[in-house]
Image (cartoon, rainbow, N blue to C red; front, side, top):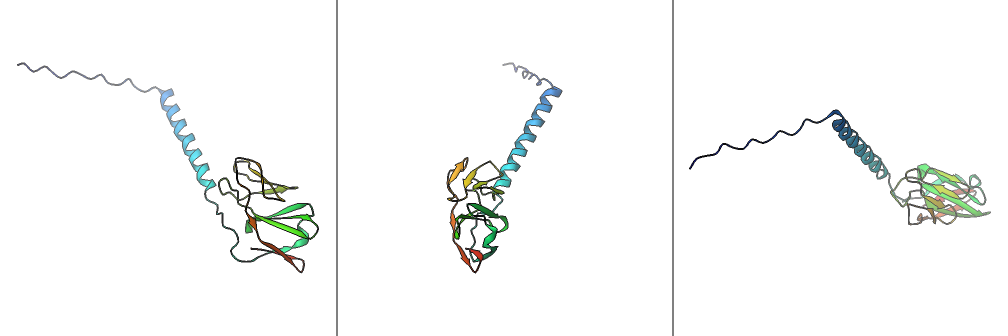
Length: 145
């Protein structure tokens, strides 16, 4: 029996500059997308666990709402002297909402919008309403939680 010499394997063709740059760009975009998604999950969805003084009830407009971003609460006053409060943490990915325009609460992360008087979803991607938070008005001051 004669031993045949091993077959030579062909070396892969050299990578072109365009191929290398495309791969690097794709990896960078994937990394950036991952960082963006990770940022969405960084916020806490905790509701107030103890009473939080929000300040003067007169700061909340009748027929509108006010965002207390640091306390993660939105307080609405649908009618004079009637207050309702909701979590300011978006039910989609846990970002804290960033604005109230009239009766529309907006989330900066993915564009979800909520009704400030009811907490209901007006625009997705969120599919669940904002959870209600207990709010009391005493002596012209609001307390949440």
